Structure formats: structure tokens, C-alpha cells
Length: 259
Ligand code: ATP
Ligand code: BTN
Image: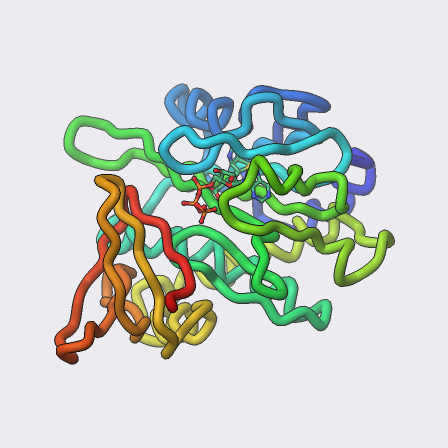
């Protein structure tokens, strides 16, 4: 990444401190350690390459050098935000879809943590927390975006098809400005995280809304139903054949289009 350009475009945002790495294991690991040792709210870790990037449940997230956005934003939640921590993944995903919309791209959120473009995964969000006793002290919002096609892993490494912004926008995609827009979106949406309109915007952006889906669970079982929307905490709401409602909570679950 062009560090001068990065500094310039991020200077208009009320961020904390910024740590930039040409290469790192995982920006989320760095941010978790930094948050533990007292990083300010909205401090940011950015890397041009990750050698041990991760998704949920320690699955691998690939970030080859010079091709992607890999960042971790540290958030110190206010007491009001503490009541809505399960909405933070939606906050990040919505900021990503909003930033893509301003570039003419219609993307969807594959609940809980992926962003799809043309039905393929272009971005992922990983939220991790630092606890202080029984309370969350800080959150790390990890965001990975495939900007250039070189970021997209070989199909045999993937359980869900992937794409890049380059595939839709061509090669002249400035990573620095996209990152700025996403961070600006998170900062602008943050005061609204407790509102009903936040949930309805999140809901409107969901992939497969009104369609049959399958939810694969960690124990191998599969739930099927029509995707209705979200509960107030951001859990997923499905209806099954008997028209009763099923709530799918965050955890070891993977959403897929249904038959
Ligand atoms: P799925 O992607 O199968 O729906 P998931 O979203 O639950 O599952 P996560 O743990 O959130 O999976 O994400 C990690 C997965 O993302 C890995 O298992 C890998 O298949 C995929 N992946 C890794 N790197 C990339 C990348 N750069 N772009 C797209 N997908 C990737
Ligand atoms: C997913 O789809 O599972 C989420 C992937 C999240 C990847 C980002 S890249 C920046 C940050 N650092 C990591 O190790 N993971 C997140």
C-alpha cells in the first residue's frame, strides 16, 4: 500500500493511532494484543500481507501481498454500545456494502460475516473481543477484502466461491480510498447501532432474503427454511415448512442457498 496516500486519506477521520505492516501474521492478533495493552478507541492495524490471516473458528483467510485490504479496527464500546455487541458484525458488513454501493456495486451480506458480490465472497469480517472480568473491554473488528484478483484463493481451497473488486471494477481500484470509506461508514453508523432502523438496513442487505436456505451446523446437522430476516440481536430468522419461526444464533454455522 502507498503509505503516504494512506496517511493522507485517513487524516480526515477521527481515528486513534495507526500501525502499518508490510507483512504480518494476522492484523487481528496484533490488534488484540494492542487492545490488551491499552490502545485508544478506533486505533487501526493495517497490513499489506497476512501470513496467518484467519476467519471464524481459526479457519484460514488468505491475504497475498499487495492485493487486498486487511485491517483490524479496535473499538472500546461505550456503556450503551455494550448492550448491542452482537450487532457489531452487521455494522462492519453494512459499512462495506455501503462503500461498494457508492462505486455502483450492489453487494449482499451472507449472514453472519461475509459480503457477496455477484453471489461470490468478496469480503469477510471477524469480530474478536478482549474481556475484563465479565465485561467486554474492547472489540477488534477484522476486515478482509479481495481487491485485486490475485487475492482470490484457488477454488480447491474454498468451500464457497470467491471474487474480487477487480473482477467488477477493473484494475484501477484504490485500496486506500475504499478503506477510508469503510472506516467513515463504521464511524457514521456507530451512533445508530441501537436503533430499529439499523436492524432494518442490515436486514435489507441480507443475501437470500425470502429464499430457501440451509444452515450447516458444527455438529454436521443441517437446518432448512426460508430466510425471513433478523432478530433484534442480529440472530437469523428462518421459517420452516410448518411456518414456525427458527432462530439461528451466532456460532459454528454456515449459510448456504437452499434447494
Ligand atoms: P463459508 O465461506 O464456507 O461460508 P464461513 O464464512 O463460515 O464459511 P469463515 O470461517 O467465516 O467461513 O471464513 C473462512 C473461509 O473463507 C475459509 O474456510 C476459506 O474457505 C475462505 N477464504 C479464505 N480466504 C479467502 C479469501 N481471500 N476470499 C474468499 N474466501 C476466502
Ligand atoms: C471470514 O470470512 O471468516 C472473516 C475473514 C476475516 C479476515 C480479516 S483480514 C483482517 C483480519 N485479520 C485476520 O486474521 N482476519 C481478519
